[in-house]
Image (cartoon, one colour):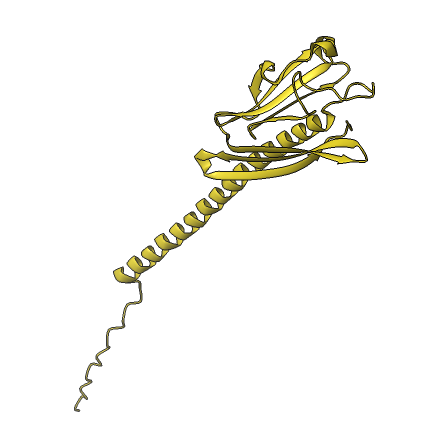
Length: 210
């Protein structure tokens, strides 16, 4: 009996599934780019937040300083309800402006240090600093001149904030023989280490009529 010869069937090798080296490299590069972008966005966000914080700090300093100056200037000339305005010795007006960069005046404030209720005030720009100079006297007969008010200190942190401009203009307003003073002030200050600069302006009318 003859036997049938069976031919072996060749099985084609299947393609192996997997990730090639090139694909791994591409994925790695994409990942690096993604991390770089995320990091850049984060750093930019942090920088913006920091800059905004510095701007806010500068603006708060300017605003609070301007408010103090405004309250002082509004009191200028007040004599304690005796019916007349007091001036710095030798001054023509209640509010004396010097060179457009300094302003001085005096007013009565009961309860001041050592009972020196006649408070002499000068605000001035000294280099890149904004200073307040003040001195109290017991009686109005001893009022000081503008140049005699010499006890000064800075209104800002000199190591952080520089004053670029401090401009003052004062004019006397008169109506029906009644006088008052309108004072315009502009301050420009900067934080150089951060490249931030801000300006603030205000117009102040003296409360106490001359």
